[in-house]
Amino acid sequence: NNNVSEQIDLMFSDRTLNQTEADNATDGVSINFNHALSSIVFSAVENDAKAGYQITGITIQGDFVTKATFNETVTDGSTYVYSVGGTSNTAVPAWSNPTTTTGQKYTPSFTAYTVTGTTTEFTGGNDAGQAKTAILTIPQTIPNNAKVTITYVYTPNNGVGGTYNKTVNFSEFITTGTPITAWEVGKRYTYLFQFGGTKKIFFAPTVKNWTSVAAGTVEI
Image 1 (cartoon, rainbow, N blue to C red):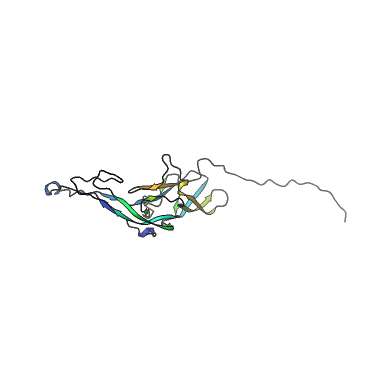
Image 2 (image 1 turned 90 degrees about the vertical axis):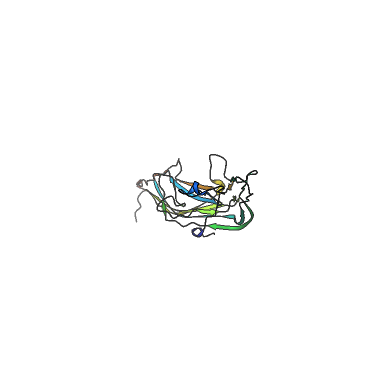
């Protein structure tokens, strides 16, 4: 659903075999559930003590897969092993028959978030003041035109601030390991906005007084 607040998580369970009443009379039968979708969340941190930032909106847009078929691909047997992309296991969950929606938009709603010096997730609901608005997507290769637009208010200690929009492609997010090119089954991806940077030059302009010069006299 492109309305993030109405998205529903899709889950599937591991198979539980050979259970008896004697084994589970007290604690119940243990059933493990797995996420079939991918989750996208955003966090922010301020590295700039000279200014204040408040995030007021965020949107992701691109030619995303919005429909597909999910199949747990279970083969009956004495064991059950969950493996994405496995070949010798009895359960190989997979998505197929993808349908792409051109220019699909996801816009999670959340309480305007004031960025602090502590890295904090502001869309996934980890902070008590934020709604649980993580974006759920069908696992897919991230399209080349996938981009995220963030709206924020900039209030410097000195000078004039304002409201700004910043749009970046997902390929511009820097990773320390292998670049992320796909959103996979059961994984939550946290993208970080770093405000102020680690090195920044600040300007403190002043206006010097005019220098008075006697430019001459004329008689009228």
